[in-house]
Length: 239
Image (cartoon, rainbow, N blue to C red; front, side, top):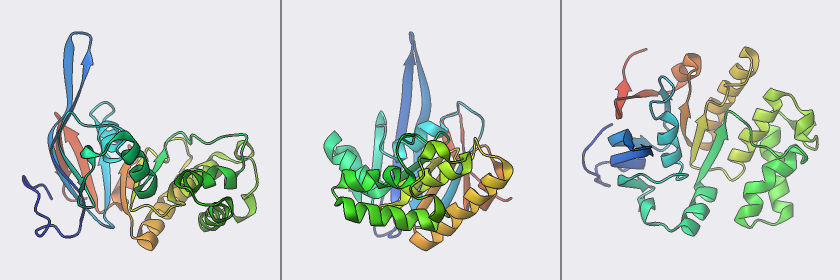
């Protein structure tokens, strides 16, 4: 859905409402406009893939949706709140509680166990060590790592490490999961397993899922497919 104005009553299920969002970067004496007046609605529980060539702004858009970066202009409403009005401290707390991230590179701490890595967001939120550990163990079991809970992550396979990264992203049951090339470093078998897990967890947790990917098989599983053309967000219809 691409509208020009935000109306809560007209879009009661919208988790995210973006209006006229723009983002550019300075390169020497040149200004490069990556995103130009983008409009987007994402509903609770919806799945979307952002596809296309490298350099068109997919990751930039994902970082803004995850509040890791701020746009140059535009409106960004998340669960009815204008998150662009938050200061950095408020934004960090909001991000920790509401958004999960999975990247192509795991960004795990190799000297820590699967449980210790997964506990991190819960500890940052202020949960007790006991509660954080219980939550971490539960989600690790759910993603298929029951027998790897206390393995150091540098002893795990690539597919297992990505499962730990997924568990860490989901330990606080965020309403939005953002994944940037989540299977980019995995073989076909492990990629398929991660694809299935993402879709299963999307349904189980009723979370919105946005994936940036070159993997058309993964994109085909999403209910919506989007791309960015000359800075504009375009919905791809059909198969």
